[in-house]
Length: 221
Image 1: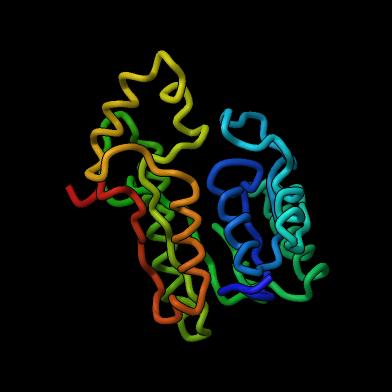
Image 2: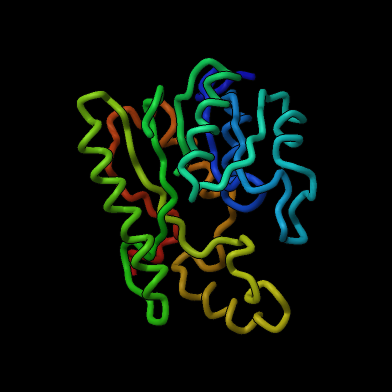
């Protein structure tokens, strides 16, 4: 497969659904070797529009090289094992979604709520704000080694995280959320994946430590 990420190896967390799955498939289309990690190959909950097959199977269908590794990212030993599996399988690790070992690039998934507040979301906002500060600090600490670290800040995106809003009884609230985006509507996982491809490619060679909103203009209001 030819593309902007040809022969690079990416370890991607949360690949069984949502943003992780979309990023894995986008990277595979660009020629990357993919290490899929999650608690299980298939998600406990999928949107009706999502293919129920494991993500690693979909990557193989695209002609990509892939390995699934069970990983709880809250467990440091699991994370070390996933990194080891990537190196054992593909002899290198270039891109880590979310130890900086044998890699030159880290992409964290933050949120627009890393940049703006939202009533009733203190814990979530605090955690995503922390992700952004960690991103900036890693970028500075490892800049001398030319390791890039950036964060994508998704806006409201059509994943299971929206939960009840995507069900019939949540239609009114979903309409309110959609109207809050200057572009109108709700983002797609593929929109986030395109930004992840850019940040993982040579096109972003002079980019580090940034929050990249992919939000239909939400934070520009």
